[in-house]
Image 1 (cartoon, rainbow, N blue to C red):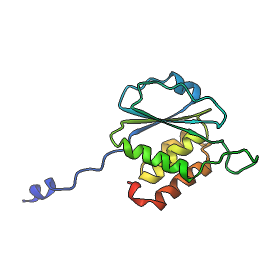
Image 2: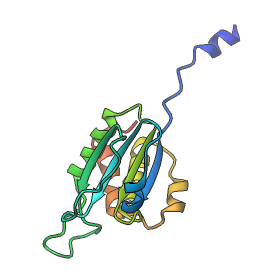
Image 3: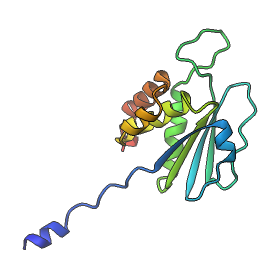
Length: 154
């Protein structure tokens, strides 16, 4: 009897996709080998990165690598950016890998990756260790977007 009860447990939640954080230079040389999606982050005035056509889908975002406005022209990461990222991931729930890149792969892209982890309950320790310079505004806004829309946080 006990075995039958054990077999009726709820199925395991889908595991997190692998997150890959790269610089623009490395992202432009990267070739997906799985079902992969890309979040491509560029400076507002920069030409979009030339990422592989083998990605299932690419989301392109443009914002400055700042945590507060220093110049009137600075474009801060905002709720609409966080919402676009969340919606993008929701469209590709079976993605095996998510590649996130920004210019240097040091601040904005790890901020996005860590914000996704926070929002979806994925582990953060390894990313925090490997990318200690993550953008605090980006991560905070991603977390707030999940709090404001909890149905997407799983």
